[in-house]
Every structure is written in C-alpha cells, then in structure tokens.
Image (spheres, rainbow, N blue to C red):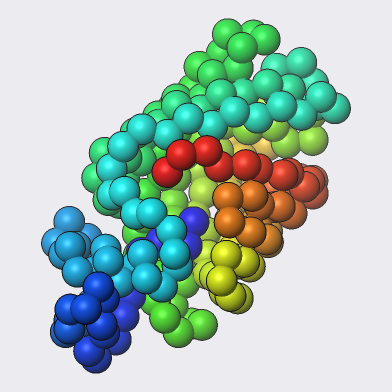
Length: 198
C-alpha cells in the first residue's frame, strides 16, 4: 500500500553500481518511466521483490459476518504500475463486482510524503453490503529488517448509506505475514494475512 519509494538526488550503490537518483516530481510524474535502477533501489530499501505488473489472487474468510460476506475471492491484474483492476467474487451468493485501485502519488522518503490511493470496491459494513469509492493516504512509519509498520487514513463514500465516512487503519507486517487493524467507516475489525508468491 505504501507505493513506490522515492529517493532524493544522491549516489546510491546497488549491486556494485553507482546510480544518480532524481527527486520525485509528485503526482504528475509518469510512473511508467521507472528505470531498472529505481526498481533495484526499491528492492534494496525494502528487501522485497518488485513486480510492476501481473496477476494477484486474494481470498478472505470471516465466519462471523453475514452469509454473503463470509467468503470473498479477489482476482486482479496490475494493468500499469499505477492501475490495478479486477473482480470481487462472493462464492456463497455468486455475486461479482468490479475492483479498481489507482496509485495517484507514490510514497516519498519523508514522513509528510504519503502514497495517495483511490479506488472502487464492494464490502461489508456492519452487516450491510455496499459499493464504495475511496481515497486514502498511506505511509510506512517504521521499517527495520523484515518488520514494517504502516498507517493509512482517508475517506470512503458508502453508496448504500448515501454517506461519506472517515476510514483509517494500521498494518503490522513481518516478512510475508501481516496484522491489519482497520476502521471501515462503520465498524472496526482486525485481519491476519499471509502472502504467497510475489
């Protein structure tokens, strides 16, 4: 969630190469111009694989929710480095809705340079299902080795309620396992996630 790291102008040694980095130009920067060197810097900073495009599969099981929301499967594709599109499938009811995530601005090095993400989704809010549009600012606030703490905040318009609500959360990640504590605009919940593959 945190977006592509941005490195200020300086020389960085990556795989025994000296690279000269540019400062971020903000939301207007064309992220498709990411160079191979920038990707290597991202790997060095976070120790994680970087794949600018590809398929992603996500499944969720929450037995305490109503029938439709208990199971969900997301299939999405990173169409560009900024845009991810896909579908949300609810096996118990057969419902299929679109998913859209757009990286408006990449995360920078400084605390006041969060990533800005906007999108469209369908989710469960206190036992009620609704399509939702959202915009959030997210930032990795602590990073040491394989342990990262990230936080986000923003707003979501919940169509079923005809209302715009604040949303926020914190994510504690160690290697490929993460614990998220999130406020959806209606209720607060915690989830544990395990990443497999890239």
